[in-house]
Length: 156
Image 1 (cartoon, one colour):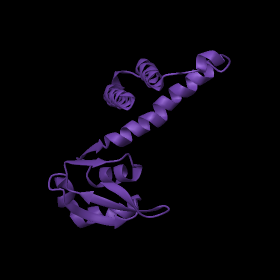
Image 2: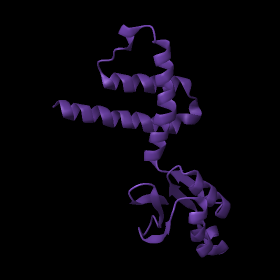
Image 3: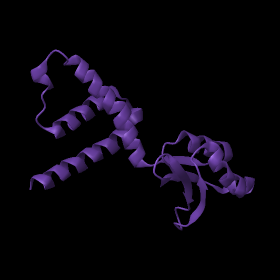
């Protein structure tokens, strides 16, 4: 389940795709709860009970509507959105905290290697988060490896 822009501005539609067959099951205008509810109404109670899992971005509207209509379904968030949310919430928090600590130490704020910044942020985040964030940290660590490899290729 995902949204896509249909015009410039904030005009969206939602698409539901069967992950096994890759067939489009439904498309509807909008991305609010009431916009995607017709999909579940078309499925009916029996169809909703057959849904085992739903992959989606981290849209609250999608999550709430799936939980309301398919409470047995497991929700899997799109890794891209998990990484983006992690970046916005966790790494930004670490960045702000470090910036505040170094506010009066200008030489310490200078960073020559952007990968050092990423690795420092990951280390701080890992130290400040618990084991319950292990999957998120693994995903971000993988992203760091990809960024390092990309930088190595750029330097070559």
